[in-house]
Image 1 (cartoon, rainbow, N blue to C red):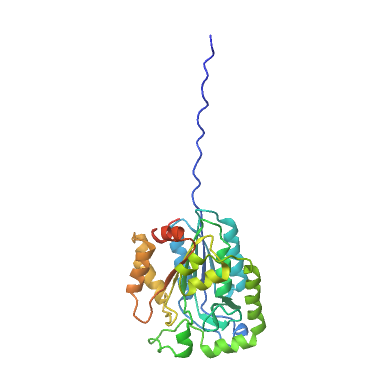
Image 2 (image 1 turned 60 degrees about the horizontal axis):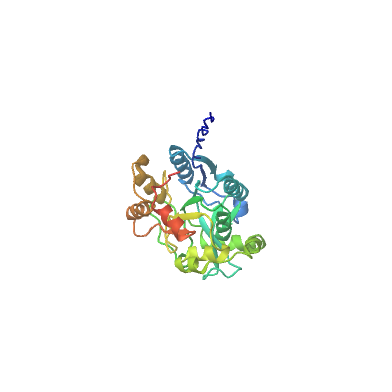
Length: 309
């Protein structure tokens, strides 16, 4: 009698749940030693960072918070690089910044106005070229959301003084005269940072289709780094020719974002989230949105509900 052959039971493979990490940077001041004696006082940036970290926790995202003196160049770069190594396709990284925007001289010719935009970290500025390079380190399939509540220090604000802020509020913009003094005092340092970025990106291959599909800062990033492997969505506090406002508890951009979010009751897409935030702010502050990465990946990302891991 032939023996009966039975098949082994199928193995059940548990689906790996996507991982979410976040980094929240809030600076109510900077080190005068790094900024020509200017300490850049603000009121709401630490609140912004803590509130965004609390939001991240409600979505199952593991947050790290860097406030004022801990918001150094080394700390920010270290945490970003650690996240880039830890996350893989399907995972999510949230990066929020609240503080001053600034500028340094552009030596690599990638800025039409010959100025590179910066985040004013406690002990020195993080140049936009550096930020794009760090974002490009994330793996294919990782979703990266950057929320920047600061001024871009765009070409118009460099030539025309922004209007005075409402009583009791400050603009999140390093004064032009301070920016010039800081760059003059630390020119070798900031120039070398740009040289280092160019060395790391020298072999990057620019995707012409991606470059043509993007405009402004996005095309700058693609031209510098090449095609982005992750899907990156950046929402800034204002346009290049505007200023972001500080506040008593939250910056205007972060405060409006939290209002629209309403403890998670918002269920629309990133596109509608951005539109609602923009609609709730005055005409003098219109949040910007742009994407980096393949058109299919970024389109799918923008269509998701915000902060979904």
